[in-house]
Image (cartoon, rainbow, N blue to C red; front, side):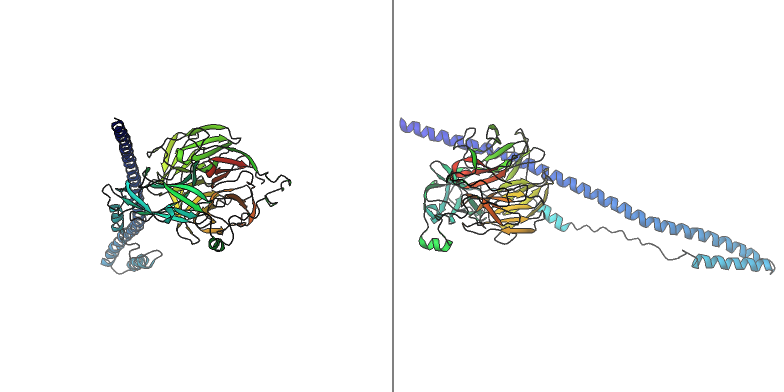
Length: 570
């Protein structure tokens, strides 16, 4: 009887999951159909506009040329008529007896001929030409239209897909580790194409703490690269379409580095960090020194692990609004939570799902000057726009974005999107129109390796944290590099995978140093200024970071499942 009940329960659970997947598939079809209709309507509009412009250009060009030729033709007709009249008079005069009058008429005819052929503005040569051609290169456009749009999917299923690599079982504190995932279809056959929706999460029994980068090799295999900031026993969960793959979650042991590892890094992570006390700097008046060794800059913290109001599971992006609100992208709870600057819970919104208006993995959040709330959805591969009351309005970037992580807004009201997966920064109008994009995968000046968040300074330049390149880069809106600073390490001005970033009114740059679990402050030229003192209640894998309207720093303390607000002297 127990076996029967157990089997029935398994079948019931499976049926529920399959029903949900089928519903999501139907919703996704409707969403893509809407995108196709919208995209082609937009193209039709653009083609109609271009047709109108060409027809107008044709009429203007024709009119100018026709006017010149018409004026010349009228002059020639008048000249012809005058010449015929003069010839008639001359002929009449010549039939009479030679006289002074007939000689006068002959002289007038000669003058008229000279005037018609040699006078000012007189010409018998065409003053314009008849060329009106159309240069319409359509072959390239036809080819582009032929290849326009692709329905992206894969036959990969979680129950057959598997992972391999040393990073499944163990890694070293502060050192990158990797896992290879091979996706397979329902029969166990290897999938040959990419684009599967994979997620990875490393956590202790009390919750998620570690972020990383999932690389799609476009051949059915994927690589998850991560770094763990402290030793201990962890779990590594690998999910395909929200289902655990074979063997997941895996038991992961994180060890202290050996002496050889320490020598390679230059110093032990266990050594005390330089500048752990807040230093006097250009940020403003130095804080009064205190004998209390545990005092830090923390004002308050909000949150524990959970799914209720004021609780979080893997909080990521942070934003602060001008109307004294703090917004938190609660990634694994698929929602955004809103608090006052004093930490009082105000509201939350978001429903899990893959349809427009739903959230699957919100990672970045920003507030537009209009009051609209902008949310980067990593797994849905688009950015959602909500009203200040949390009502869905629109989405942008669908079909272009691969894995948006951070969002920001420039001084023109444009939406800056950091695509972590594509290693590209996109700039959109709020309507969804793409203005420009820049960046590619690599370690060059204009390249990224898993970029995370962005901020905009007073010069309307974009500041991007380059996670795996351990640096911060500043670009113009056109994508030209203005400044780059940071290197891998634990010293002042060094990073172990930077994440959140913000800019104060003086142009100083505040950076969350994820792997080193600290917050550093730099001037506008990238020179290290100080730390925010977090020693009494240490951070654990900080993510998004922002400046509140009352001048404090708020940071997502992801590993501790809370956000913290710190004093900040400007």
